[in-house]
Image 1 (tube, helix red, strand yellow):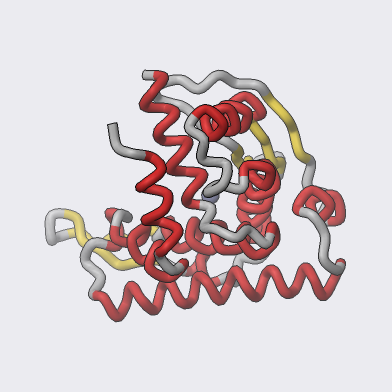
Image 2 (spheres, helix red, strand yellow):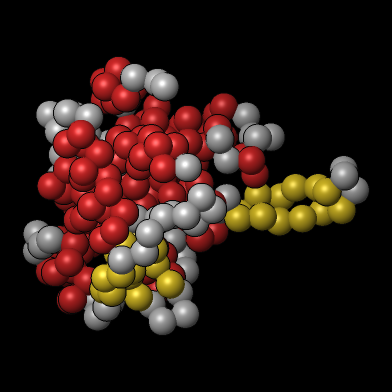
Length: 206
Ligand SMILES: [Zn+2]
């Protein structure tokens, strides 16, 4: 099994920009884009996150993500759902009822894991719930602000080299959501560190 401590240390040495570039590289719909284009997407997604964060501060002042959700009338629902091999999540945003769901079961699971692995010095585990909330809140902002860059990041493609298609570059929204969460929570490390711990935990379970 990979050494989680080393993985987290290596990750915390990387810049946000590099971490997001790697995320974009893993997005299958971005595989045909050249490096300059990918850099532009990451820069624009980060700029979008900063803009959304600054607008919230301007409108409501510096608040916790949960308080922003209250101001914006976005309900937060707490559930306890055990992760399965095919379905595991910390939080999600449902467009239909514009609700944030936080899965306390998996959030606590990641917390336990951080204690068990003795990595609480590397991962700010107390900010996990707020970070997940802020991330999902960003997806709400995307929904109500269709003009946002990540909503428009559509790439042209071709199926079998024949049919023209358009697909949304989901990584742009995920990068922006991740960066937004980092800004709102003033997290000292990338939210990606949480994902790493979560992925490790899932491997342990299944
Ligand atoms: Zn997301």
